Image (cartoon, rainbow, N blue to C red):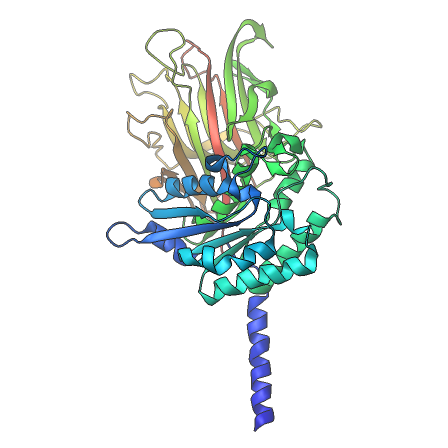
Length: 493
């Protein structure tokens, strides 16, 4: 009898171990926390996010300066409040500069769990090099088990950089601690913010010093990257049943040319220039310029980028501000003469990685998440396209336009007083049957586009602004800003 009982216990332990040996998913792990954050008064309660660790979460930049409100715990709180404006939520920092995990574990119950946290974020690896892998693992596991015993969710963070180590090398102390933290996340089924990998990818393309306040402390840009990654755990996908698969938050100091190419064509009344594209202030910026001397025969220069990856069915989303809100020529109008677009169509790239035409022979599908034409020349008589449109363009094999969907075209999908200069979220969901367009989460347009009737391409994403022929010719300088582009794929399609 006793032997049978031991066998049962052993089999159960295998099941438990099997269930635990997987890293949690951002879609599900904090589902209960996100549900609480969505509640409004009087059903809501206070949600506590506790950040435990060393000098980086404490906000040390160039020692001894502490920039609390620029550190990732506070930035995460700001981002949470943007998504959940009615939530009562605290970001509590229990970090101490210079501390390692053993010291953090000793005060974990009295100074962390006493706050009754909903989620604990643990970030100690930068200083754990002083105690080694084995002692660090024991201390991390003590904290993990203490939190789990209280039903507290745990997110582990791999280390941010130390410029004294080569982050691209495989066997440095920080790389080893990062691997150990990933293994702990898998073993206990926890969340993981892989800061080390984020900065490692950046280091392969640009100078990490742009993200550092001193050799071992990240600056505001670096903290922004970590906070953005944390938000992947705290923010639901825009549509039910979808999970984030690919994104660019434009948080760096330059465009990631492994992901994007410049639009560099000469079309309508402008030539598109790479130098008009920049990444600054956490956004992609497309500067739109008017020149005294023509460039390639054009007095206006636009800008744009095109994703090097192609996508198909899923949900596509940007957050954008179109125009600069300034009346440059004193005529009472702003952003005159520009055609902004978030759209998707197959693209071809030249040897330098740029796109020189919007007429590739391979195109059949064009999805216009939005086209916004400032000061459209047909605004008064309504005889043509209006200021803001969302639709599908179907292209024939001969390169000519077959038509637009929905039919008849319903191009005006937002009110006349819509302000494109304000920040708005634009998206579209593409399935095998249709495309559904959204503005600020509201459904604005549905286009029937079945795969058994039309060719469905794999498509590149375009974020562009040009001086179009259908815009008024009273051109003035302007710009467009994109906070992010995100692509979500359906779970178990």
